[in-house]
Image (tube, rainbow, N blue to C red; front, side, top):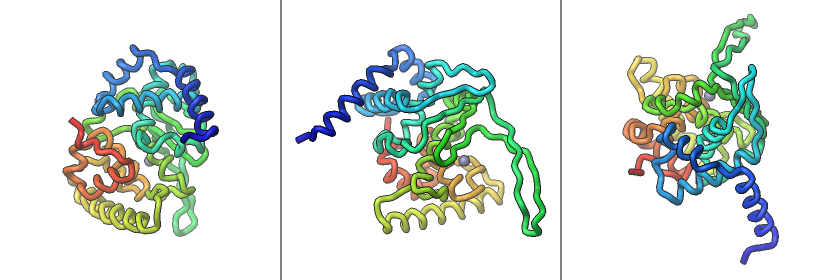
Length: 259
Ligand SMILES: [Zn+2]
């Protein structure tokens, strides 16, 4: 039996979905431009569209440097952001509201202090950024090219939203909130073993399915592995079967097993 609160929530969700219904032409265009979204059965596709409407209703998009975030752009971002949480629901994204879309990559000045206390400044180029409490920043050029860049396992939206999931427990450490201490220990073991092997392969200048940027840290490795898991699933599974299984358990999806 459903409680009054559940019925209330369902009704408010239904209203949000109607308010932010995605027109059929926009949805079909989105699936055509980002084919990795549509390698799902009909029930999953309906759920992706439902979650995307709820996402559009609960987030605020803004364009930087005069960029107008049109409907097709917001839907492209919403659908890619909802793919990782298809079975988890939108609650892990409740901690932020804003999504800032830049026309292209963003140049930022960074500094770090070395062991001798000397401050080093350097320029960094970002295709996206996620921080606790938001907003999430994305480069539209990278988002719009993600249909083609899927073949290299690259997807900026999945990357940044994997960081959001990771930070769900307040820590960016490559370990998202998990139901038990045992699962956390297992996660840490598998992730670190895979990470160390991956770093050795990058040092040896081997070609890898995962973006070499993943060697930066365990949290970047989790984000990069999540990208490939969703957009180049079969290659990712072939190269990292244990990591694939770990992510499949967490996301409750098996994208490599889809036709
Ligand atoms: Zn990252």
